[in-house]
Image (cartoon, rainbow, N blue to C red; front, side, top):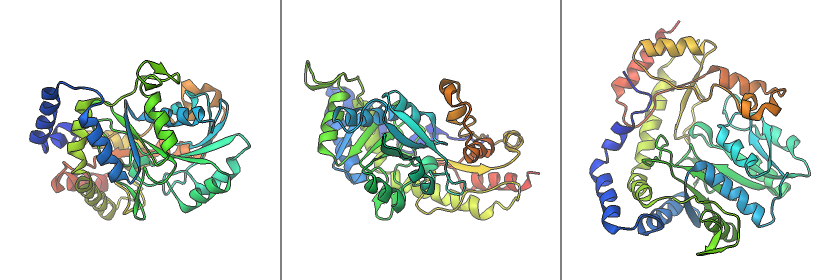
Length: 364
């Protein structure tokens, strides 16, 4: 069986370094807000190209800390609107609603799978305060037009960079393109921890200061609570693990790109629609599209290939957002009905990839 994502195989490549990093934390006797965290935050900020990196508990917390930070700074208030892609993972939207803000869903383009910048301006109202772009599947969602729209209407541009560690737009990395970015280091990400972890990156000194406090019970100084904060901190072991793996991220992304190119160039089955080639993408997810998606998934399973669906139910059809059940987003719904994610990670061999290609080409 070719697993969709073999985390043990991926991490085994760095086994000795990872074990040493964990042992160093154990030997230090310091498990939170120590040297490992400072070191990773500094290295990741430099890698992304931002002035600040603040580690936190997970990707959802990272986005919430950004939004809460803007609310504490008076940039936003309860009931304000944040534009977000309709086809995103639920966490992007949860971050907005859990801060008392209102998500405004905008359709993506089917070819790029990213928010359609031609539809954003029509969704702006007097209550709109931000656009949250989500670099889904490892592809860059930012466009020059989005940047111009945010400048024109004085909107904050927030990046959900949970799926795109190492992706670039021109010479800049995602996570440094907007006013602030949330990052997830869930184990299955391109840069994955061995548990939950996340981070905020920004060049905004004021926002960074508030985010640090909000993630530590609202404290700027111990036992002095300026905000109604939360407990959301990256731990030393996760920071140490991530610091090891960060050194290999670009090389591992290059391997993902090689595999993606093999798929795009060699799969010729007209029943299976391949994603548009994108040199900048880091292919966190390699999606294929098929009108007979469920049959294709079962066929691949029988052929010894594990797959995933990202995501079977779009946010506006989820029970937790039942107030949106009357809404229709045809492009989003088509993506969610046809998408199938096939294995694409740095531990795969060419033999694995060619086996999958052969199976895809023989599907009927």
